[in-house]
Amino acid sequence: MNLPEPHDRFGVLVLSVVKHDYVARGVATHPRFKLTVVADEADQPDWIHQRNQQFADEHGIAYVRDVSKAIAEHDVQVAVVSSEAERHCALSVQAAEAGLHIIQDKPMSTSLTECDRVVEAVAQNKVKFLMWNRNLFPAVVQAREVIARGEVGDPYAFHVDFYFAKDAGPPKGSRDPGAPPMDWLETLKAAHITGADGGVGKEPMGELGVEGCYPLAYIAMLSGAKVCRVFARTTAHFHQLYVDNGVEDLATVSLEFENGVVGSLALGRIGAASHPDIGEIKLHILGPKGALVISEARPEVGIYYRDQPAEEFKNQRLLDSENDYLLADSFARAIDTNSHTILDAPTSRAIAATVLAALESSRTGKVVDVP
Image 1: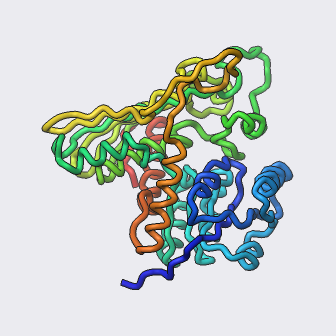
Image 2: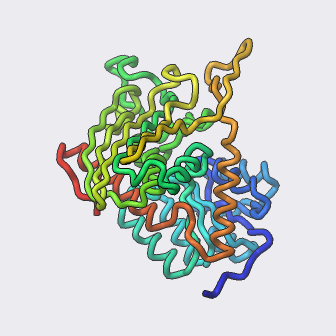
């Protein structure tokens, strides 16, 4: 096997930070990665250029309004893609065709055709792809180790609760009945300062589309199985923004796997007043020898003090930054050894296909095969 030429340190091209900048910041926690340049296309609107420029200024690096030029003029080996979801794949394909390894924010895309383009470009150009994920939190890693040791036997059922305790503007039903519908993009642009703009983009995206990648990535890693059929129910239960734009803030999904395993998800954006932590994130795994119940947030500490901001989470996870470091470390190792990443392009494509099938099921009320 021909291994890629090792780099002591990888130069990182940050391809937009308009969705979130936490992926680029997370990659930068590892000494093997150096943020080198921020880039985006010149025809993007001013608000996108402003966010990109602010991030570049903060890190003392250039912002180039031309992706091809940035690649040609800077010594980079890795691209971090965190644009609006509808541009994820186009930027990832451009990076792959330039020979750059790719770390991409979720979701992979809102289009399965676009996901297929990334899978093909990554394979053809022999680069590595990592979808940023939460799979290396200690509780999840420990669950994987317990399963690998056979302590519960071969798992036959999975359930994940994945609730984010974040607001999204006015609660459902709280606005004047005659008020015009809330504009999706403008509302999420304004929510950027609070970090509540996960679905920013021209196309409204519900929580299954935005966050479904996380619990499905847990199950993919722990089961090693492919989802073949889904049945889903979705609704806009909490937030007027979701009602006005016809997308879900609450969803349940039943899963059937090719190997006979079954699973289910319950997820949503449930409002800041609903939970003292970031939300209820818990995995349940059943096997013939026993069962596991994993709270992803553990270990955590509760912090309370006078004049504490209402929007600050009271319970704080101690190891958020460790997950970032471990993801970056595993990615560097995959490049060095020409091995698989923890969430590669084909698996990310399969997760996107599962989400899109679930959304179709919620619209039709029927069981849907996952393509």
